[in-house]
Length: 132
Length: 95
Image (cartoon, rainbow over all chains, first blue to last red; front, side, top):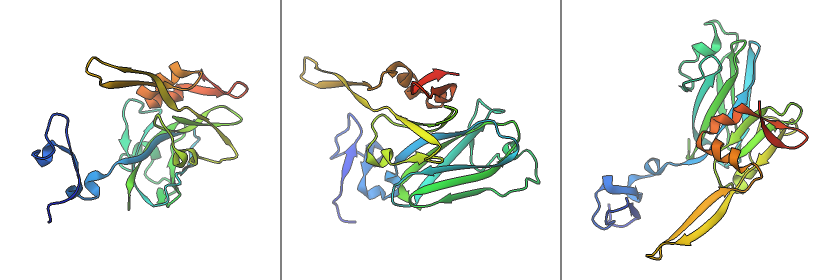
């Protein structure tokens, strides 16, 4: 690879002599190494009554973003679970009537699943600057 | 932070996190646009000063009448769900 590009060093290191681990950014790391959060936030469904629920978020990013979602329920308020793992606590029973969907588009995403009665559900979403 | 709330109940439907929101964020919405309103809180410069070396420092704070609440929520965003929006005043109130 030719010796050109863009580098930013950590505070206290000379960018001209810093090793890769002493850098904050280098264009040689490639797209995914410089992946950053384009937008993040939360969404909430109050008390649900054993039903298919949908979170719909319009992001207007203009591309289909790489996405991470965590969730927590009123039953499990002290920890976040990574979507979709751990959903059995959310689904309530194995023969939940509806499938789980996460559909991601270039202007919005929707998340559908069947939530156990009595739960309230909060999701935390991270949309990245990289397209899937 | 941008807070989306149900226009009938005042319950908070979701948030977009951050201190400064550009047009891309301002175009975003959560849930049904007809059912949900939004409160936008941008952070702005509250103080600028220089030290003896001439280095410049800047403080930011929420540009909102409820800046104390927004500062608290900034540190722990999920705490926003301890609040709901008073539909008449458009202010956050503890549940």
